[in-house]
Length: 428
Ligand SMILES: Cc1ncc(COP(=O)(O)O)c(C=O)c1O
Image (cartoon, rainbow, N blue to C red; front, side, top):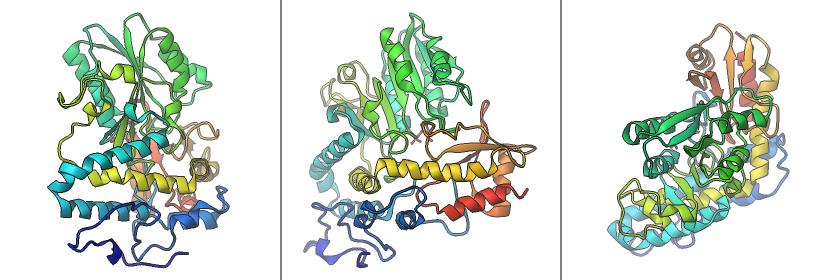
């Protein structure tokens, strides 16, 4: 256990009072009073998913809300305190240096984060743009391709609404044709999903858009099998990896895709407003940036980062976020999240009018996310009942295809939260 230190250590303050970040990272960032453990304390130990003493240590890194049980971590994640403290120091530093930081230091800081993120994702840094989120990343692709009227795009029936809307805008603006693959809720095989997409490919198909982890249910799609068939037909492949990054895939670079968009504020637990876009080198030149940029070469991935003045401290915080993730390790983290999901579902699925509509009892099928229905309850009624009577926060999904309550535990949840949730579901 580490010694508790003051939130801002004096040794980090220069003579002028400004903060010197230097080689500050999550391992040596000064801790605030609440912190009980350092990253060193969670790097080793028995990380089996049901070893509560290890996972209780990990949970102490997060601020838990008072007054309710939070089981909706799918929107974005809280930052662990190591990242939060770093982020606050970095913000304070920028607030001190102001334009001197923006005109000189920020460029090198962004490159440092790009390099670290490229290693983490398993991609080439020259194919990696740091964006604000998946929405921005995939809008760059959808709005930036040289569409011709009549070009076809194949998307999924459970794709994220913002991407569907972007394609609808491209339909109105460029005259593209949208074809929708019917991905079954509980597919019998991966081939069934692959066929739903590939059966829609024609000689006019320019792009297939695949959601790797469907946010509505947590279902994971074998995008590489679909990509293989797309490649054979010269079709471009875009993957929405918003929920897959730092959650269900270790190295995003293992996905066969021309474009991959992701959000780091979900499962990498960075500050809100950090995402990425991976784009194959040979395609970069032909894609228009969303924000006009003639300052960098057309084949330079940085042309997609022209966002104007923005919080660089969030980008700097990618590094401590990776350090926290690595201290636990991808496999241990995923196994724990799957364990939390399976712990409640094994108690309630098929009982008391409750039916899970996520493929949950297979290790290849996703991480923390699962969605449940209850007979005689609309999704809104069920989530409202859970909050009003049991003080459990979830989210109602009322989508044309998916209707239920989505439940997303996180590393901040104790097994007691999960048992309490399962017991509550069986009470009414
Ligand atoms: C599958 C999927 N794609 C994209 C997004 C958008 O993410 P962001 O709001 O970070 O852009 C989400 C958000 O939940 C999502 O679940």
